[in-house]
Image (cartoon, rainbow, N blue to C red; front, side):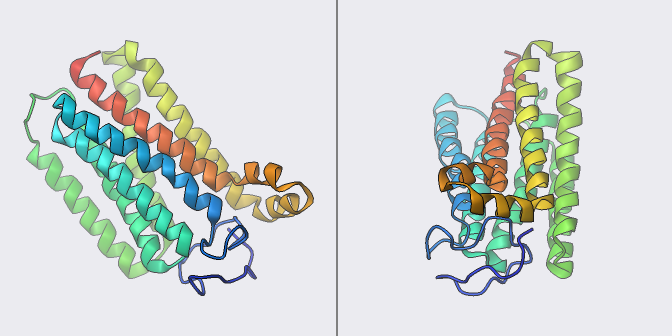
Length: 242
């Protein structure tokens, strides 16, 4: 996390419960964390085109919902890192839970009849989302949200590994690429948190063009955005068995 003492800008004092390692308002007075903001474009633009193509191809609505959910996460994350306001933080973190629930639904329904609805799974995931939302709004503890998100991702990983190992091994490349990108992003996310002060000191000593490459939270957005996009491709590839 960021050390105390960052400057203020257009959006005023920080009210979010998290403030990441990127120096606040260092690039422009209008965006609190510039690189953490613009890196969300990877989660906004490609999924919009993916959703449009899915409609044209007549794919099931759950895959269109997956693309749109990823776009919502990107837009929420953009607003959060641009403002560092608590309300915008919720717009980032809660859609992460909701989108992951949609991904879980798609992964467990990929072998079912077309246009069928698993109401039991749907109810379970909606209930899970409501409980997480209610508890998180009450406790306001980011670690709780991160653990709940991690549980959903772990479920996706287990399901994906099972499928590429026992059902569709020819999709192993796509599945493992998606997973690998996400894990690399997670590694950089942790490095950004743990070694924040060292990274900031390093950025003060090197040219900006080099320093920007150490904005590891921005890389987390890029890698997990791309990994999530590939995961959606992987998910609807399972339905056709291609």
